[in-house]
Length: 458
Ligand code: GLU
Image: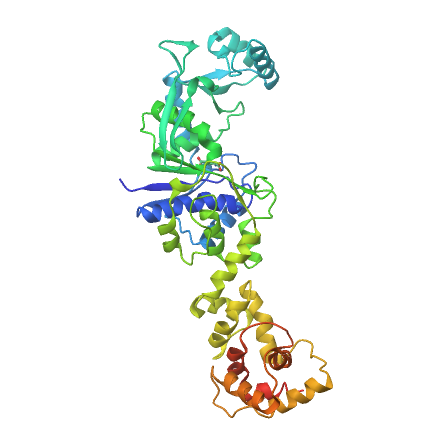
């Protein structure tokens, strides 16, 4: 069977690096197993879901290097869920309830005071048709609960410990006791669906073989496995990865926006920096900059993810970014440099000269300007340094220039002026770039050329 996974966010906001972790775990799993990746939008909540968020999510995934084999929207599949509802009702596994939230809360308190588990007591199963009709006449509408298979044969009143176990791809052996859970509401009183049923129906109909998602869904898995079986399907395999939190332990939210994929992109963080951190953090693998998705797939070992939350520091993204840029071939940077206006026959040599000194690709632009237009603010040199520089510039070798010219030149300058070390290099660097640090002058010099260099003679 072809491995088939899905990434199933609700399009109610922009995805953040924690969501990217889920998407990437699925994508890398599919890559490793030559499987399929389905992008599924859990948009049954039509009021909060927006197509523009779905589009933004697809864009973010594409930017990260995730290319879904198919895209599905739950809002276009209601008839499939309606059909499953009819089947469950016919089997007596979905039953109408009329309690208000206040009534439920009161019952919960009573159960707690009697030292009973605070789960739904299935009182609605005992309703007669006359009682239901009376509720309906009052204007109440039913919500529908799934009868969990956690009771003694034939008697839903008598719940018994019912273990549902699975071997989690990440966490190993997992067990949920269905008797510790309330019968979940699958359909609200206004007829809308909660996430559980549509998710299971889709996982069945789309042939999902592996459900990989955050560990906030571990408990849902017990219910879902029961639902798969109630609908006559074999449950898929499950994997629950740990969630990302900030260094102070706060969870990430689609609403806060700060660590959204879009904002990281705007800050100039490379997709592979995001992917490397999102995948490797909180696993036994070192978090290092991995240059390609194929390489990341090789490093990807979901079972090495820890069971506790993975704290991460956004500052690590900048470090990873710097490392990626240091090794980034020109071909990969070319289009983005062109957008910045860095084009022409010097663009490649320029990139190779500056890539080791930048945090983001956009940081290359000020260097391009320095080379083209001279230092942003020319330096006021002391008389002594100015005399030194004039003498030095008079010693500039003839062209052609290459990577060795700097050495030839500074050797000649040393012989003439006896300056060496910092007192020799620093005035030259300041005269050429206006800045005390930056890319190797040996690489910048051929880019300036003799004429460009002479133009910087103080
Ligand atoms: N829409 C659900 C979520 O975003 C999907 C969970 C799942 O993968 O089953 O949490």
